[in-house]
Image 1 (cartoon, one colour):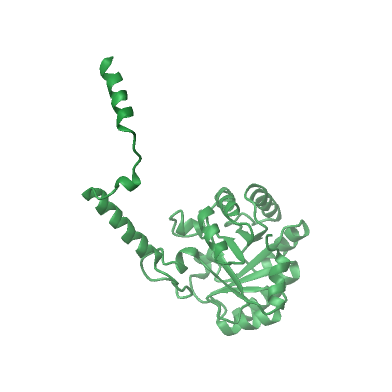
Image 2 (cartoon, helix red, strand yellow):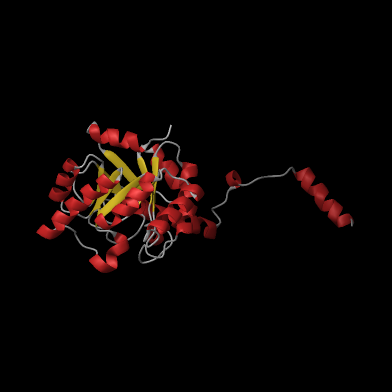
Length: 279
């Protein structure tokens, strides 16, 4: 049975930590669910880690629908949250149209959007229409050209605004909130003050749960990971090593062997060849 937003809120009430992880296709959703991940996020980060863009900005509603469909096929129990892409919820009508397209076309139980008090009318409108909405504050990637890729909420004014924005999103009807790259002390206070679950990424252990990007936790890319990420395995290196062995064995003739090959009875093959010769 699939988890609901009420199950996730009950986890906060019970003091249980919530695990959220991105997934972008059928196989990643299957693996995430087998591991016990409670919330799967079909993140617009797919624009970077799957489509190869430099930012999330080129991602479209159609992209999100495609990937949400794949994730929904691989998931049976997790709560699936889908990102609303950049500028697809700039107005109330835009938000309603985008939400309808994604939830009808791609599936998922909830949508996530970025922004604070300015997004209150959108959150309120969507929740009134039956769409569960998760907020996203702090380092909001869709605004990276404006705010930069740096820790948010480090001065008095910014910290105060983050608290006020979080409370405003909750009041508007958001069922949960992602806090990205925010000082741990501030994130802990926000988590304490909110009734809804607060999921951190680079926001310390005081949040109600954590979210990470699939490719980061599995070490699928070379180079330095973001500070907020932990590489729990080096799957990328293992994949490269395995493929190098594959290339070497094909080149040397060691693969395939009879174990990976089909066979035919000699008499059948001989008869087939004889019939061709007789023509």
